[in-house]
Length: 406
Image (cartoon, rainbow, N blue to C red; front, side, top):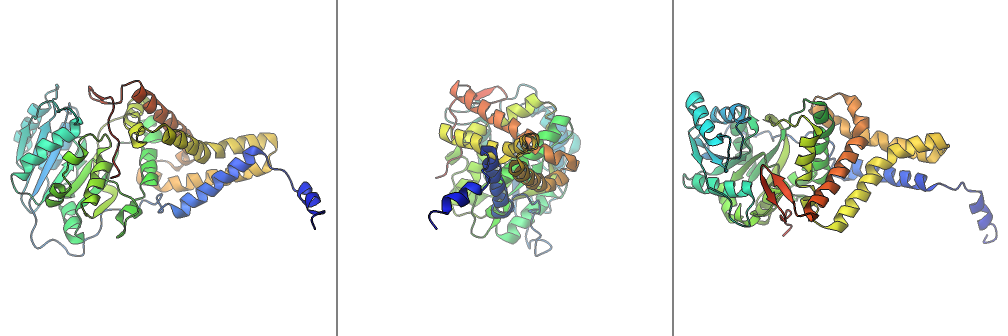
């Protein structure tokens, strides 16, 4: 037996390095397909309530941090003021040092449209150790808590809500005894670059934080979407939010982790009636949006950056390269394995494209989008090490903290 073994192994075809990499990519894709919380499915929507409505609708305060949002405020703020919520509710807009008249415009819109009561407050520049948004939320939440709300709706100034949005959020929280209910707002997809980049942004987020894992009775992941977060007030106090996460750039994930540490129950899903109206028409705007926090997500760790780059190359770039090189070079194994991996990749992207009402021919282009995200992530690290850190609307956080795990 031992003498014949070398001869047997010698007759087996020798696979190229590219073939081995393409097989490894295929294995990873089958694992992602079946073992990563079915992240690619888009069925995690706002839970259906078992009762038609709560016996008593709790009081809610809506807190909106806003910095230089005069462009989008006429489309977003009236949608909050016109909520048909059956209980008591009011809106607190925190003008975070705007230079475009955001606060004045908010008052004018409230006078013009009516609806829920509006209070506008300006807290001044953040103290050292605070990011701008969380500093604004600190003041808005403190002012709101003085009115005794049972729930706080934290929503960004570029988020437009359908009239029944608040009612549905509160009903889901009360019915499910949830401490935090968050919806990933449907982002704007209009320009060519938005079509290429935006659905993939949500797809990658769901891959990193599978919604099903977050929503389990025994969760395997923790995250929230900062554009729309309904938070139980007593849980916010118990979790010391936002003080406990005051330096976080990725504030939504940090918020969810703080709530989870305090024993809170969390739900996250895709929105059907909550939309982001902020435009990102060109690649430059989208690039800055991703690069602002990509390296913070990696905890500013060069080893995690290297692992992320290697992972993106193996999972997203190897399959198309293997197909092209395999076909041209006659490497059947590389071409076959790369083709199947590419097909699985595109297939998992289809539900997200349907959710965003985009043509399905964009699915095979996901490797190109992933390559852009790879470059954005590397650029985020370069900016950080040059001391420019996370920048947003005139503020730069040279050494911001990532979302803490503790």
